[in-house]
Amino acid sequence: MMTTKREPTGDAKMGKRLRKYRESVGLTQKQVANRIGISQGSVSQIETGGIMPEQEHLDALADLYDETLDDLRGRGVMAGEIGNFEQALLDAFKRQTMRKLKAAPPELLAEIARDLAALVESRLHAVKPKPPPPQPKRSGA
Image (cartoon, rainbow, N blue to C red; front, side):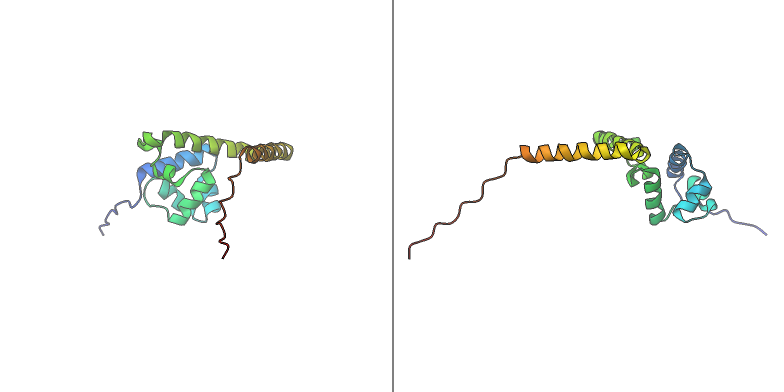
């Protein structure tokens, strides 16, 4: 009996990126599978480019890895979009900061919240309110 080799339906480059992100957060394929609700075999196939993840699983992977969907798809700076370089730097800084905040002790989080509240309050006082629009003149009819 002769078998036919099926063509991969996935994206090998995206699979490599997903594997890199998984390894960077220190998770196994089994752990990722459990967290996003698919089998370990499916994670393996996604990472080798055999299959494409469903959109809901891609969204879950982006959340799990603290990455944007564009980064997972290779549409960020990695894909040569130098025009978005500044945004990519900001996104990377945001992801790094969020990881640090998730690991921060409650006392530090409370201090940060107080500092942010004070900053917002000072900025609100620095903004001059616009004068009200002129009222229409009433005729003495």
